[in-house]
Amino acid sequence: MTKKEIAKNFLKLAAKGHSHEGFRLYVGKNFKHHNAYFKGDADTLMLAMEESARTNPNKIFKIHHILEDGNLVAVHSHLKQTPSDIGFAVVHILKFKDDKIVEIWDLGQPVPKDSINTNGMF
Image 1 (tube, one colour):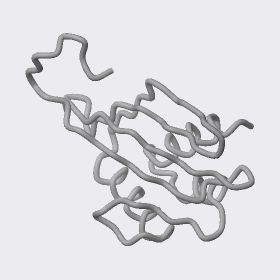
Image 2 (image 1 turned 90 degrees about the vertical axis):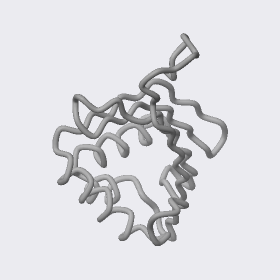
Image 3 (image 1 turned 45 degrees about the horizontal axis):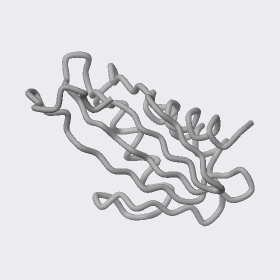
Image 4 (image 1 turned 45 degrees about the vertical axis):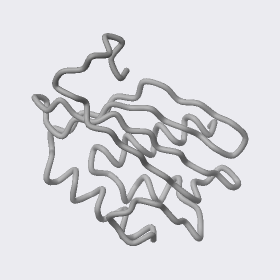
């Protein structure tokens, strides 16, 4: 399985409320993340992902681009908490060691209701 496939599977499992399985299958030892709203350990992020899926069971997570460069994979996606939500443009950057995710950065920007840029965010 490629790093891009691992990243895609991990993020889709997390979005669907199966973060425990995603962490068990794809996350390595000494994992850390950089989300400013949670402690930087695996368990805290895993539980936050699980709670988000429970709170938003109709969440839509659509991946638009996946890029790989060495031990890094970047995933550009559209995340909607509900089908009627405009959502966020999200970029996850995942660092790998021995085909396991060892570090994650995530950046998000709300999709504006009205944008002067006709190209869109995706």
